[in-house]
Image (cartoon, rainbow, N blue to C red; front, side, top):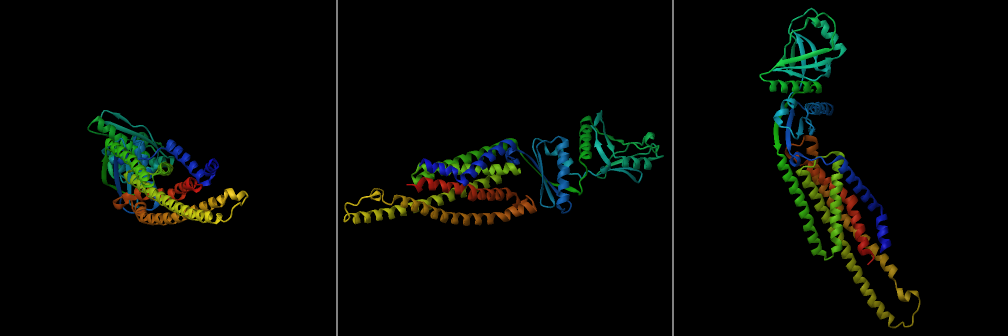
Length: 440
């Protein structure tokens, strides 16, 4: 038996499982688990683009929005595309009305003297720290040398004329052109300023403009189509509820397995396999930074539930084969006794041991045939389940996480869990069953 246990841990499938479990635990410890808003609380802003865009443009949109929110001071933020015309912004710890102007405006900057455009957003190289004096705010920035030369040429001789500065077509500042900038000499230092009704409003406006100038402009016009919020306390309730549900599920599974097989040795392997699948799924989610939300939790439970079904199929097939082999062995023993009554005095090594090595080998071979039969059922069931999940995953990935697309987390985690089960954890469980009953 000790040699069988050693051989079990030397099996390549067991070694792979142990390595992946260690890797998953390390990944979860280092990278953590990306929780959805329904677990950690926060706000979600749905942004609709004026037209469908290609992947490159969508990457620019998400990058600009991410820069804006990070520059604004929002630390816990996730910006992700949803199809080719929508963007989802998840934020935590910030009220949505504080950032709605940041993410809902293209951020197109222009400076004009008369009808001449003297500066655009792409000319800006560095945005300096803003300052507020009473109700007046100032946002200094620097521009490229080429832009400074162009500005000097267009501003030459236009001292004291207004320099109208626009953000998304709205006039935000109209300072008079200093005579020192109207002499044809290029300068890379520029400032935009304005006044508000209160110091607090001036502070907010200066911060917004500084953020928008730092992040650049969006390549397309956008519109906010929805804002939803989940309180952090409600997110904790969801998380605690999911943990309690998972713990209760393990207890119920243990009781049912014990009642069915009357063998406590089967309870722990089934529970261990389920927990191993959970750790591996979370490890994959941690590595690829996949959001674990309520839909994903439902997918994890579905995957683990199918895993328990598959383990029961394997166990039933093996025990059924074990009963048949015992019955066959009993019949042969009876026949052998009848034969030996007429053959007394037979001596030799096989007179004591009989054909036991042959019986063990035959039993193991029979178990493996049964396990293969069980895995045929398991693979067919997994293929059916994955085929059912693929359309939901496709809709979520290609058309966005709105409507039925919100179930993409359920579909994706279910598929990942099923693949982990049929290729990693369930073969190890089958190997354990072979160890447990193969030598009896």
